[in-house]
Length: 203
Image 1 (cartoon, helix red, strand yellow):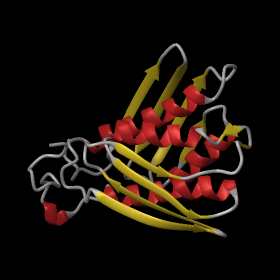
Image 2 (cartoon, one colour; image 1 turned 90 degrees about the horizontal axis):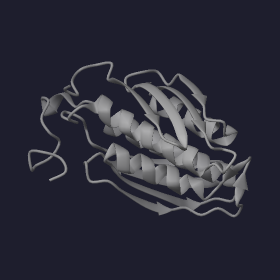
Image 3 (spheres, helix red, strand yellow; image 1 turned 135 degrees about the vertical axis):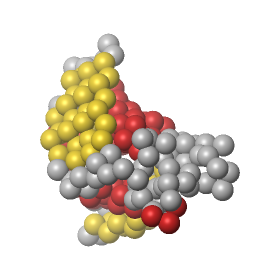
Image 4 (cartoon, helix red, strand yellow; image 1 turned 90 degrees about the vertical axis):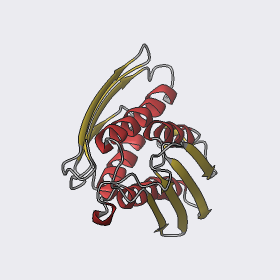
């Protein structure tokens, strides 16, 4: 599938002994979402991600929450990243790079992304609380790491300053959404070419 095609969509079902997840997304959507992970704060973050990326996102996850939230959180990052990669096809024609600086009241966070098929995460974010709502704050790193690895993207996230932990977390998701939104845009001047001087991504 060439990135020039509109309505870039994908569905993925992933089932392990720890989680069962279904995702249905449309990159060229309007930011509508139906999210059900069993973790209220994660639902809120993914709804915000959908709204600001303009990705239509339906996700239902059943996980071993009686153990903890780690597997469900990490695996939602896996399936969303994988589904976006699938919807992008061979990545040809896209702008590839995107960045955003997101203010949320007293908080400012910077996010940059390169959809390069060379995944990595640079995470310069810390929290003063161990839990937000019912969600362990250390799990945000796990979500972004799983997302970047399975999308095949280089993602840099740095919280420049902030005090409110909710604002810090949400600014990271909004920053990813806005930078991803820019990076996935089809550039008509690329004429469907690979967005790399090497001729192919990941080389």
